[in-house]
Image (tube, rainbow, N blue to C red; front, side, top):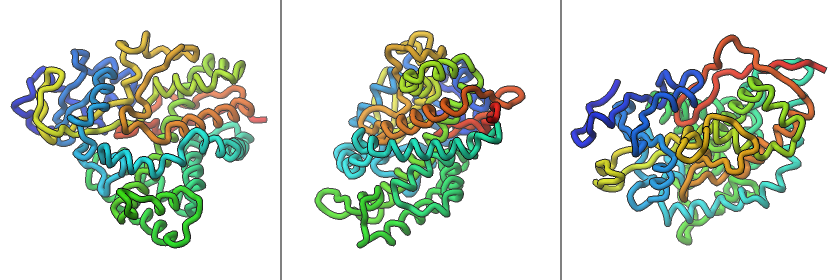
Length: 397
């Protein structure tokens, strides 16, 4: 149910769009959203859904606003904001910079390089487990399991609760009910704090021990800071890669000519990953207006929420020629699939590497596959988009 439109928002800027439940998000969301969202410039509109908020659908506008931390803050964010918070995402520079530095060493290209053998072995094992059957439901059997296995290994965290962690993450990023999202985050938070408490005084070299040793402004991190950083790592590690990989496999299975390009020339895989992240970005971002202002000719009031629909920023025809066309040989494949500005995703290099290595191993073992669906694939909205099911079939060996 929508709220009343504020007086400072003119009628021509109002567009009824629910980021969780819009019918545009249920099938072929990228084409549907691009075909139906307002095209006037600036590409920003106001929706009465979810408490009322602004939506930035244009890449040019998003790039400028995400870099402008003086006007748009991460500390006042979207309705139903995660409680507890996810530091450093819900902080601004200079605090954000210092928090980010605590976890950054684990995600550098050099650090990720040391993980490649593990990622390749994990990919091989997961593909080998499903290959003889000649079919799988990719999301439940591979996409959800692959990145959570990577994260739990990095964190040296117990694996017996993986199913529950995935369920909580699903609610956190896709439930339209703010109370459900908060409850899921609270449960995740308790889980994170329990691990930190058990590890205190027995820190190792794992990711969570690194956080536990972290310092902010010269002092140890307090409980809220540990919780925020821990939640950020869990939520980032458990869902975004799964959703991205699911969309990629849905596309490749439904477009065998593109898949054959990768089989014929595996050196295309890194460029293909970048292009498919552009056309199938999954995560969105939020900010809040720091004060009353006129910006790009629009009136923003202090505390108003701004939702950056980065899922479609890579489809902005002002930045990309023929943006809905997939081309693994594009010279540049610009997108905001991993965010922009100082809050750009710290795990982007790891995410790219996970997807690249998985595809390299998949094409070696399954030279052709198709989507086993009648009609269009169903998808889910939320702060992270995802297909509902990705059933694949291939010739078993």
